[in-house]
Image 1 (spheres, helix red, strand yellow):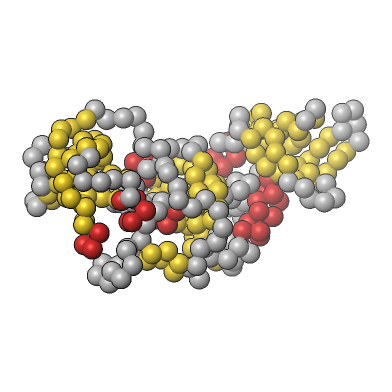
Image 2 (cartoon, rainbow, N blue to C red):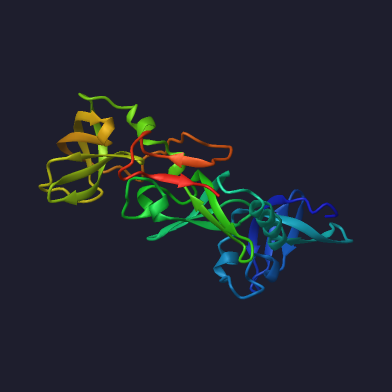
Length: 278
């Protein structure tokens, strides 16, 4: 308590007054409602931020110990979040952070970056390959990596991205060669062809469009790889049965700090994809 050490326990009960009871080793502690989440005291967070914690591990500090047998412990999840957020706000842009996906919306994925501090990865930053919904890339509860693109200390907000950790065009295309037949996902159907995702950061173009819809799973034959044009030519073989959930993610970067990220091959000026941090 004196050192404000952040601990973790499982919330076992939410009272009618929305206090949380938490297992803490051999003891049970109480998190008062206003200490159960950032924003509850100010009215900017909904009660679901408390109710949804039951049955899950949560972080907190000890704020009070009353004598008794056993001693009565008062805890604060809010304080643990404040400490975590203060530490995260000191991180420079480009810092790679582990995170856990908490829920998905059409516009992006919400992730916990520590002690219940939640931030958003916009759908446009989930991957280079465009997706119709973040559920095409993530599942709730999935542990992922993110990269900090900026922060707003006054508002206590963090801005995150994800695509920079999934490799450049050259890093991804190195897995493939002409003559291979591989599985992929349809990510766009146009009059001139079908865009097929081979990896989250790599898409090729097939001539066929008949009978295909976005998010179909297909097998394709790789006809040609053109690094100077950043293009992959594909031939559709057939549609595959869908798989439950997205493909597992493969990261090229999982730690450290980035200063810049160039997706496009060196020397390419047209349609250059680049992120400069800070």
